[in-house]
Image: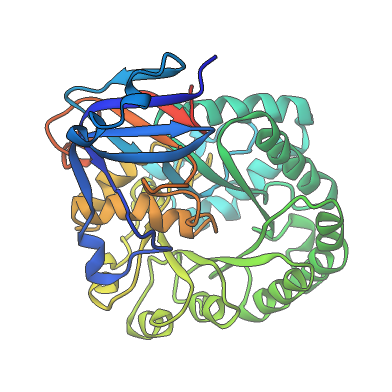
Amino acid sequence: MLTGLLITNIKCLVQTEDVPKLKVCGQEMSQIQSIYDAYLYINNGLIEDFGKMNKLQEIKNLIQNPNVKTINATGKFVFPSFCDSHTHLVYSGSREIEYIDKIRGLSYTEIAKRGGGILNSAKKLHETSEDELFKQSISRINEIISLGTGGVEIKSGYGLNLTDELKMLRVIRRIKNTSPIEVKATFLGAHAIPEEYKTRREKYVDLVINEMIPVVASEDLADFIDVFCDKGFFTVEDTERILMAGMKYGLTAKIHANELDYSGGIQTGVKYNALSVDHLEFTGVKEIKALIGSETMPTLLPGSAFFLGMSYPPARNMINAGLPIALASDYNPGSAPSGNMNLIMSLGCIKLRMLPEEVINAVTINSAYAMGISETHGSIAKGKVANVFITKEIPSYEFMPYAFGSNLIETVILKGKII
């Protein structure tokens, strides 16, 4: 009976930590600790030991144990699994027709006014059974696992009524209970304003607060609560009311902020100690000042800006100011139909002008922080969950974001098991 997994002759073991950190900020993001010619020993689903290969020769009981499976990783790199801290991957169908509208020049706001966008996905989800929704969603989960993701946050928000929001959250719970990936659930009832409430936005906010949140909390369906605080969606006042209501039920705040304009969402997130504020295309001096010294993780979603043809958030200004940055995919049918985190690293380098070391930190330890799991995920450290992947033979860790069109992952290991 196998009792452990030993990976030997690793060309480079990336993102190792002797003293684990919860997050990495500012100039420290340009540094990662790695071990060349390394081994990694996994036991009972956790990282038990790692180091230089010449040290391994001293551990005779490990290398001679017939119950330990050995993988020879000569010429290959081992990374901690990606943590994708912002997705909407539980959805029904696709929205490629809106993609054509974008090509023809219509804006995100114009498409939404025509009944597209989030409301389109809400209609499709309403017409889809829970079993079918799970079937579609677990396929996406399996896809992102194969691409190196070992932790994912999934939001509701395509329901926009109590029944359909619960349907989404129950599907997320089924994924959590059946898949080896680490899953966090976010209640995002305030994702958009339903058509029937277009002239009664405050009434819909009342519905979210008085009807949705209590049921979501009573069924323990969510870890976090989120609001789309932006132009044309929910105001700062709406956001504060919803966050306060969620926090009373133990739901930690997150916010969609400043994607479409300077919305006040970043400052609101800091005020309510949000775990993360996400998007941040419109981020200036005041917003950066508000984030400095806070416990809130700025999370950038370059896949969405890329797909929508929007301006990118000022990552360099944020890092130079001493802030941490997380990167996430925003995997959703309308503005980021991809959960490929290696592509997100590439966009971080190409469009946000981040260094390879910075993007590695942003998709591992910092994105784990934005999910509330950096104590157990996001780096190679003793006692952490053994979520790692082995690459194909590559020349350097910089090659990962450089080769943006290639799948460089050969073996995925989640909770100590080869997937």
